[in-house]
Length: 120
Image (cartoon, rainbow, N blue to C red; front, side):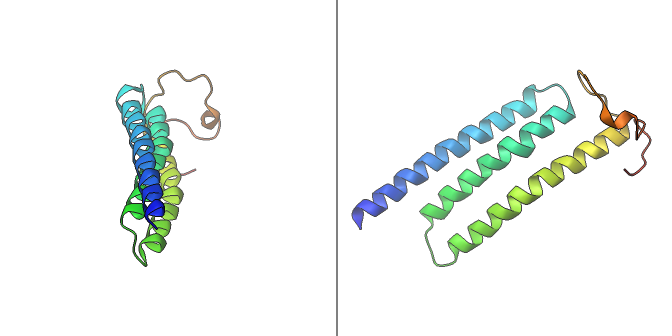
Protein backbone atom coordinates (compact mmCIF):
# COMPACT_ATOMS: atom_id res chain seq x y z
CA UNK A 1 0.00 0.00 0.00
CA UNK A 2 2.87 2.35 0.76
CA UNK A 3 4.40 1.87 -2.69
CA UNK A 4 1.06 2.70 -4.32
CA UNK A 5 0.88 6.00 -2.46
CA UNK A 6 4.44 6.85 -3.45
CA UNK A 7 3.71 5.97 -7.08
CA UNK A 8 0.56 8.13 -7.05
CA UNK A 9 2.50 11.06 -5.58
CA UNK A 10 5.14 10.70 -8.29
CA UNK A 11 2.44 10.66 -10.98
CA UNK A 12 0.82 13.73 -9.39
CA UNK A 13 4.16 15.56 -9.39
CA UNK A 14 4.71 14.67 -13.05
CA UNK A 15 1.19 15.92 -13.87
CA UNK A 16 1.87 19.18 -12.01
CA UNK A 17 5.14 19.73 -13.86
CA UNK A 18 3.63 18.90 -17.27
CA UNK A 19 0.52 21.01 -16.57
CA UNK A 20 2.64 23.94 -15.44
CA UNK A 21 4.81 23.68 -18.56
CA UNK A 22 1.75 23.61 -20.84
CA UNK A 23 0.16 26.54 -19.01
CA UNK A 24 3.40 28.54 -19.12
CA UNK A 25 3.79 27.94 -22.85
CA UNK A 26 0.16 28.99 -23.36
CA UNK A 27 0.64 32.21 -21.42
CA UNK A 28 3.90 32.89 -23.23
CA UNK A 29 1.98 32.47 -26.49
CA UNK A 30 -0.66 34.95 -25.35
CA UNK A 31 1.96 37.59 -24.66
CA UNK A 32 4.27 36.93 -27.62
CA UNK A 33 2.04 36.02 -30.57
CA UNK A 34 1.10 38.88 -32.92
CA UNK A 35 -2.68 38.78 -33.33
CA UNK A 36 -5.85 37.53 -31.70
CA UNK A 37 -6.16 34.51 -33.98
CA UNK A 38 -2.77 33.01 -33.13
CA UNK A 39 -3.23 33.92 -29.46
CA UNK A 40 -6.46 31.95 -29.43
CA UNK A 41 -4.55 28.96 -30.74
CA UNK A 42 -2.22 29.17 -27.75
CA UNK A 43 -4.98 29.56 -25.19
CA UNK A 44 -7.48 27.23 -26.80
CA UNK A 45 -5.21 24.25 -27.05
CA UNK A 46 -2.08 24.51 -24.94
CA UNK A 47 -3.57 26.12 -21.85
CA UNK A 48 -6.55 23.77 -21.88
CA UNK A 49 -4.24 20.76 -21.75
CA UNK A 50 -2.28 22.44 -18.96
CA UNK A 51 -5.47 22.82 -16.96
CA UNK A 52 -6.39 19.19 -17.64
CA UNK A 53 -3.05 17.96 -16.30
CA UNK A 54 -3.32 20.18 -13.22
CA UNK A 55 -6.85 18.93 -12.60
CA UNK A 56 -5.59 15.37 -12.96
CA UNK A 57 -2.90 16.06 -10.36
CA UNK A 58 -5.48 17.53 -7.98
CA UNK A 59 -7.62 14.43 -8.45
CA UNK A 60 -4.74 12.16 -7.54
CA UNK A 61 -3.78 14.21 -4.48
CA UNK A 62 -7.37 14.68 -3.23
CA UNK A 63 -8.42 11.05 -3.60
CA UNK A 64 -12.04 10.63 -2.43
CA UNK A 65 -15.12 8.72 -3.53
CA UNK A 66 -16.63 11.22 -5.97
CA UNK A 67 -13.48 13.18 -6.74
CA UNK A 68 -12.59 11.04 -9.75
CA UNK A 69 -16.09 11.28 -11.22
CA UNK A 70 -16.26 15.05 -10.71
CA UNK A 71 -12.79 15.54 -12.13
CA UNK A 72 -13.56 13.48 -15.22
CA UNK A 73 -16.72 15.51 -15.79
CA UNK A 74 -14.73 18.75 -15.46
CA UNK A 75 -12.03 17.48 -17.82
CA UNK A 76 -14.62 16.49 -20.44
CA UNK A 77 -16.37 19.87 -20.18
CA UNK A 78 -13.06 21.70 -20.39
CA UNK A 79 -11.93 19.75 -23.46
CA UNK A 80 -15.31 20.28 -25.14
CA UNK A 81 -15.72 23.95 -24.24
CA UNK A 82 -12.21 25.21 -24.97
CA UNK A 83 -12.28 24.78 -28.78
CA UNK A 84 -15.84 26.08 -28.99
CA UNK A 85 -14.99 29.21 -27.02
CA UNK A 86 -11.83 29.81 -29.08
CA UNK A 87 -13.79 29.41 -32.33
CA UNK A 88 -16.52 31.78 -31.14
CA UNK A 89 -14.02 34.46 -30.14
CA UNK A 90 -12.14 34.08 -33.43
CA UNK A 91 -15.40 34.33 -35.37
CA UNK A 92 -16.38 37.49 -33.49
CA UNK A 93 -12.92 38.98 -34.08
CA UNK A 94 -13.14 38.23 -37.80
CA UNK A 95 -16.64 39.67 -38.08
CA UNK A 96 -15.58 42.84 -36.26
CA UNK A 97 -12.75 43.33 -38.76
CA UNK A 98 -9.67 42.67 -36.64
CA UNK A 99 -6.73 42.21 -39.02
CA UNK A 100 -4.50 39.15 -39.21
CA UNK A 101 -0.79 39.72 -38.65
CA UNK A 102 0.46 37.83 -41.72
CA UNK A 103 -2.49 36.44 -43.63
CA UNK A 104 -1.36 34.03 -46.32
CA UNK A 105 -4.88 32.83 -47.08
CA UNK A 106 -8.35 34.03 -46.11
CA UNK A 107 -10.99 31.42 -46.91
CA UNK A 108 -13.82 33.44 -45.39
CA UNK A 109 -13.22 36.47 -47.62
CA UNK A 110 -15.32 34.95 -50.41
CA UNK A 111 -18.23 34.16 -48.12
CA UNK A 112 -18.14 36.92 -45.53
CA UNK A 113 -16.59 40.35 -45.97
CA UNK A 114 -14.48 41.55 -43.05
CA UNK A 115 -16.27 43.74 -40.55
CA UNK A 116 -19.71 42.92 -41.96
CA UNK A 117 -21.18 41.74 -38.67
CA UNK A 118 -23.30 39.12 -40.47
CA UNK A 119 -23.71 35.63 -39.08
CA UNK A 120 -22.01 32.81 -40.95
